[in-house]
Length: 397
Ligand SMILES: [Zn+2]
Image (tube, rainbow, N blue to C red; front, side, top):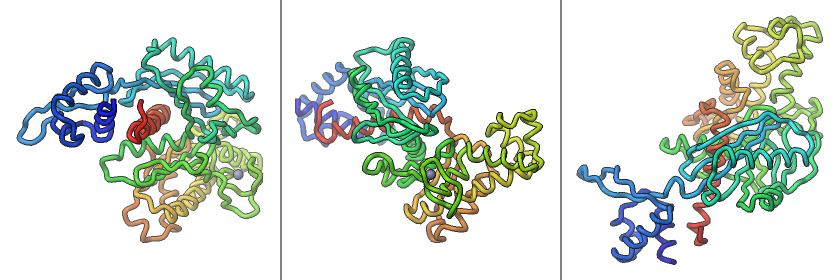
């Protein structure tokens, strides 16, 4: 049993490995290794992969972890929409679906989430034996130690509810809770793995503003999983009151609803803007896409509001550059629909305010990944990291 775990651990850490390499690295004899490999293949934990060519063009048999070692259900909720997917260890999305709902009552929210998971399992025909865990990624504040949700983005109030415990009791699976910026940072890191990226910052710009941090190739969660609350860094002394209780937070200038609010206020003060035409005079219907359209039409009011938001985002980003000295800083979320116009404002503000010696090799980019897919896959990667660590540290799977 011990030898089997040792070999599994080796493959998890260093896959793909040939039989010869397993023998060398484990110190276990040839015959025993062959036997254990057979057992692990039969158990569906590893697969043989003969496609790799090393040395003088020889095709060698390599062993790697079976991408279908286990399957997960991944759920994400952003305040308006719930998305769900069935994924495998190999980070493939096998099935996905989503549903609009903005339930602002905790109990109703949880019961709807539970029935969404049950339906997802039914619709995807997920094999109960393969299904090992559920990963939940939320835009809000969570406590990864206790499994409590402390608040969701855009919710005025939220009674502390232990979502992990409720779901564990309901489904009898391992439940993992994450914050959206963290899982998106993990995904952005994954696609840059070969670029020698070690330190990456991911800034989510949407209804909330949050930061995901990758340090030395690993997510930094903070003590309770709540580091990166950059939306509530105060950027203007004596500014407007924020829902967090403070005044002049970054979110008051740069989250989507504050941006829309500022444009509406401009219109109410009589400033002329193209946006009125775009929404047919119904200013309650302004969306981020309309603002982007106005920027393309060189509309003064929208340009001014986005410029201001971009400057403050850049200001906070410059502080982060000084603190973390990252290789790359990636921005994602709905606000990046404002494209190069916004990116150049953020870049200029970072270049102006961060310490110059930290800027030489710094990459500043907008995300290219589809957000929903990024959340599902990023959450799945975070679970795989935890799973790998558990086995490597000596536990059995
Ligand atoms: Zn605040």
